[in-house]
Structure formats: structure tokens, C-alpha cells
Length: 387
Image 1 (cartoon, rainbow, N blue to C red):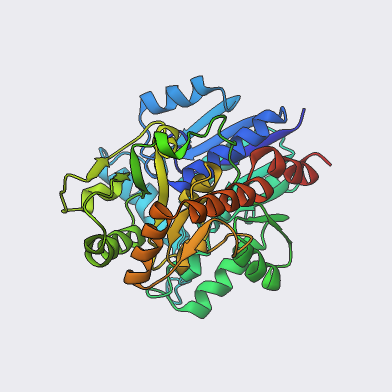
Image 2: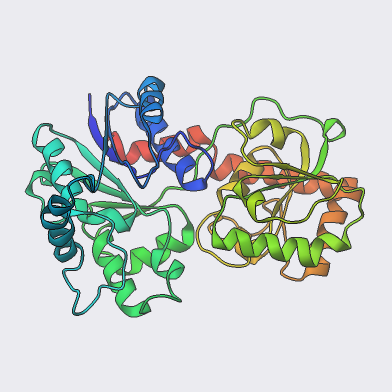
């Protein structure tokens, strides 16, 4: 039986963001292939509590679960300052005279705890999520016997381009990804960029989801539009644009369901808008909607909500950023426009033109089946992990 050490700073069972859904899908893959999994996470980043840890252990996704705190308690302030804050300042800011311009989230305390796990176990694979945590394997002789894999999730330099020096940030991101034997890219764009500069093997590993067992007929659906969004700056901009520039153009009879933490930033209230702050099971809502929305103006990487909608055969109305990361950019079930009027027209076209709706729904299902259906993606991962 092969053994993998799987690090993810967030709690994958909190399925309220695409990155957690992604990590859960990778854990499920290893579980399905009978890997022995040791799971490592960071207490504060993942907002863990004892109930969360117990629930994760009971989920049976890992043989051993380690949720480590990256910093000690502040009860003994002198100890905290002398033995954590000061040493960690110099560790995380090795180049503090010449800043790296790239996030370093690994603390000295956390890396020591991570090494302790490695010292007591032998792993075939060490799987790290995010380049910002890549230094967990750097200068670590305990990782030499293992194949090191990083799931990049996103192009971090592109996310931080307004804050950091792009050249320095990109150079550091490529250096960190190159610390690994295999780099997984979630989108074709990121695979192309990373493969041009990284010295290791860069593999496309798109988002993978189950095919829904039953898809309701259009006539049975309660909502015309479904909009799923977490709370981040890109979704905040997108929601503001949609409800300010597009929503007023739509008939008040169009029923909209908005799901996710984005609702915390919406001030609009109307009889045709239903808000759901958190849904344990999104399938209920996807099954009861006709069209999915993805009004993204900024951001990088594959939009998980787009892949989710495709799996249910839902046509999608989105901006150009909405199709970022998709393997096929056309005939994929998406109607794309950055113009508010055309965006609204695309919505109404799908809601009023039965033949257009059927065509785009068929395209959506085909795009999902070819590129993102779980068992299809699993076979590609087998070439990496079961050789």
C-alpha cells in the first residue's frame, strides 16, 4: 500500500470555496486508490476547532490527522516573543533587506512540527497545496526518499500583481514550484506558463467532479438563475457589477438564487432574489436552476462553480474571466460577454429560446464529460501515482 502525506492549510470538509472542493477531490482520489493518507493542516489558517477535527477524523479520509498550530499561545508573552516571534521573524523574512515579494506562510514552528511527522514515517508521496507553503520541503533531507508533488491551485503572482513586484514575485513562485518533482496545474493557462519556466514535470490536473445521478427537466426548476460565490475581492467586484449594471435590465419575473458568503456584501433586496448564505448540499440548488451565472471581472484560474454548473448540464452566462482555465474555450455551454447589455441578452436568450437552451445544455454536459468527469480524471492521475 502506497502512503501519502497530504498537506492542506484549510479544512476540505468546509465546502464553501473552490480551493477546499479541489483538495477534497484529491483526497478522495487517493482514498479510492487505497493509499494510506496522513493529513496535515494548520489550525489558524483553516479555522479549525475540536469539533471540526473530530468530524474530519470520522469522515475516514485519512489514517492520521495532524492539525498543527503555527504559533504558540500568547499567555507567556516573554516566551512568545523570545522563542517564537523573534526567531520566526528572521525565518520568514530571510530576505528582509531585499523582500521576496511573495507570501511565505510557513513558520519555523510549523516546519519543525512537519519535520517531526516526516521523521517518524516513510512516505511514497509528499503532497503540498499552494506555492506559498512550498518551503515545507525546502532544505529538508527527510523528503529525499519521497516524490514531492505540489498542487498549485492558482497563479499567485497574477493574484498579487498590484501589491508586489511582478518580476521578483514570478521568479520566486517558479523557484518554489521547481522544488517539487511534479507540479499539478488546475488550468491550461497555468500549465502553459509554469511549464515554460519550471524545471520539473508540470501536469494538467483539472477540477474533477462526480456526474450527478439525476438531472431534472427544465420545467421542474424553481429558479431561472443560480449564482454561487464565496467571499473574496474578485467575487465582490463581480457581484457589484452584476447587480448594478445587469440586474436592472432583467424582467422582475426572473427568479434568482444567490448562494454563498457573497450575500454578506449584497445590499439589494427584491422579491425575485432568494439568498442562501451556506448550502451543505449545492446539488439541490443546481438541480432546481435553469442557468448559472459567473460574472467575473478579475481573478485567475479555473472557476470551480463553472465546472459544477457544467456537470449539471446548466448553460452558463459569464464574462471573459469566467472561462479562464477551461480546456475548451468554445462550444462549452458558456455564453460570454463583458458588456452588461449583451450579458443580460444572453441570459434572456437562454430563458426564452428553447432550442438555444437545449444546444448550450448539451454542450455543457459534453464539455464536462470529456474534461472534468471524476473517473475520466482519475485515470489520468493513475498515470502519475500508480506507475
